[in-house]
Image (cartoon, rainbow, N blue to C red; front, side, top):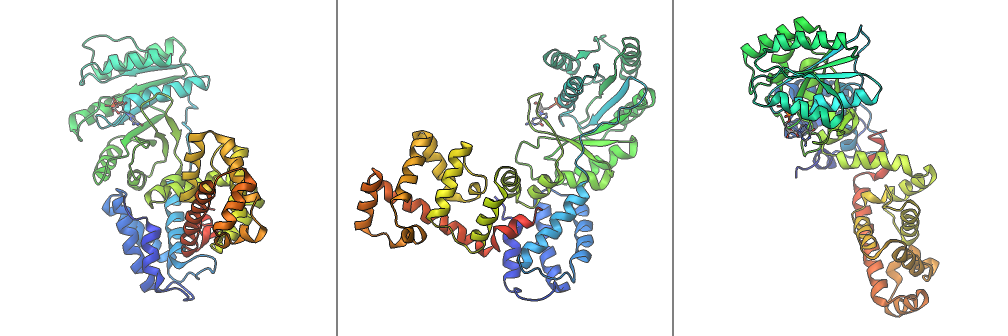
Length: 442
Ligand code: GDP
């Protein structure tokens, strides 16, 4: 796994703590790390370079906030700039034309065009549109049949196959069939290419000329690395793209292709493919992808979840405690209670490594019982012990076990779990506190 950008910058900035403003030299040092992080996330080199130049300007001279470390602040500047550049969260297709609105999908072979055609067909149908799909791919054996099968699976109409017909003629036939039969949307799945190939590009242009698409979507595999710039520029030079679909975002791609695509085409990324299944299509989330590029994906989604599911008060109290690196038995108990109420690990607690283990233990033995037992042990402690569990000696352990109807082993397990979490808290504090971390994504 890569070091996350925040970890790296933490190292760079440890020496700089306490200065008033970010100096040019500080920022330049940090930007070297930013550039490496972008390249590791598969952002194409020229894109990474111009991005870094742009944010260097923005960062120099910014006052260092007291609540975050300079490293975090630079991460925030980079994160915000990334979100800004990745464009708006949009899953809208512009289909407000005289029907049938044509949606044409283009891209390299294997990028996920056919799958995405079916996914979009299914989505539009679920929105009440009458959709027809047609495959213009006469190069790949059985490509047309593949779309027909997907059409059956999604219950979306497909254009009947006529053997030997060429793409431009298929497009014409599809258009007139869609008009005649009153379809709202016609999806055209074009032939793929292994690499950029002029004959196929010409064919694509001819089809676009006939079909006059409302949308021309470039489908790109998110694992496309440095080549992303070539793919994006060749396609966008040849046809007027209206948007991009990034596929395989369910895998471990770091999402850099998104930035390259956006920078080169200037068009919005409209959807993200999240799996092979036909419902695995999501709106593109710029924030999430920015987090992923910076190597903070988990934190971002956990922070999002935290925001959604934790009462504000709880979160604030917890954040204050975390900022101080504190996590005593009362905090643990609050988290256990939350786990019980929500039937799962608390979102904030999910960031604490030890807490995941606790959840696993609970899952294994069967929910509430374990949680109640832990709660009983904490109840059997004195208030002082809850604040400072290190005070608990062997004699007290026996008392606590007796008082809670458990064993000394159980008490030891609980103490060990708490110990691990506290260590994790101290680590978070070193990074500037959870509040600082959360502020990055606000
Ligand atoms: P095409 O040649 O561009 O039409 O590509 P296909 O649509 O045939 O897709 C190629 C392969 O990628 C198939 O096995 C798909 O199931 C798979 N695929 C497409 N989109 C996704 C995605 O978002 N996630 C994953 N994991 N696989 C995908």
